[in-house]
Image (cartoon, rainbow, N blue to C red):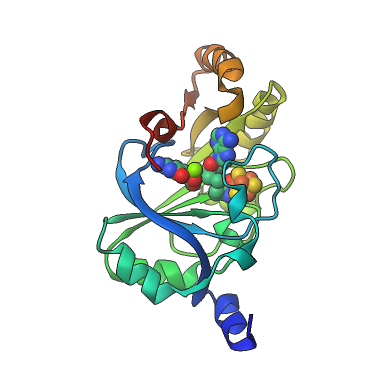
Length: 209
Ligand SMILES: C[S@@+](CC[C@H](N)C(=O)[O-])C[C@H]1O[C@@H](n2cnc3c(N)ncnc32)[C@H](O)[C@@H]1O
Ligand SMILES: Nc1nc2[nH]cc(C(=O)O)c2c(=O)[nH]1
Ligand code: SF4
Ligand SMILES: [Mg+2]
């Protein structure tokens, strides 16, 4: 990458854009709501079950001007979900400032492992054992969405719930490839511990992006 573009990426004025699509938010609190998704490349958290491993290498995704991303996104929806990859590897200030200037609602899907930047109407925090969230994102998260791959993830979920703010809504979401095995565990757990809710990847059942 040439140094001029590198500088713009460092400022968050350009971002490695993997894909963007208009769909229905499948997961968590806003599930069922139409939204435009912006998927930013780059992630080094390394979840072995990640369902978008193609996003990990930022070099494979073209640096794209945030103004161009926003000019396009605003045509589709008043709700924009920024995901990845791990969007917080990049400075989200410019992107969210521009989205907000058009009156758009800004939502983020994040592991919280990097400094929280950007102006967000909704933060979905999905913490990962390998690279834990920052203190700031525990304070600001609107929902905590823990992925359950095995029993130990229920222990991890309680540990993470003890760190978030008191208004944060708590979700357990089955890891997709293990869903048949873990859904019964989650169902029992939520009935025993009703502060938790179930989140499913409903877009995968609906066969939409
Ligand atoms: C692909 S990640 C991108 C955003 C960010 N890196 C993160 O992990 O929150 C988007 C959401 O999908 C979840 N996810 C990824 N792979 C999954 C899988 N195999 N089963 C269930 N949820 C998954 C993540 O935990 C996160 O909540
Ligand atoms: N429909 C739909 N809903 C989603 N919610 C979070 C997603 C993500 O990959 O961040 C996602 C996604 O990829 N598709
Ligand atoms: S943090 Fe998110 S994008 Fe990164 S590997 Fe884990 S699920 Fe995938
Ligand atoms: Mg997804």
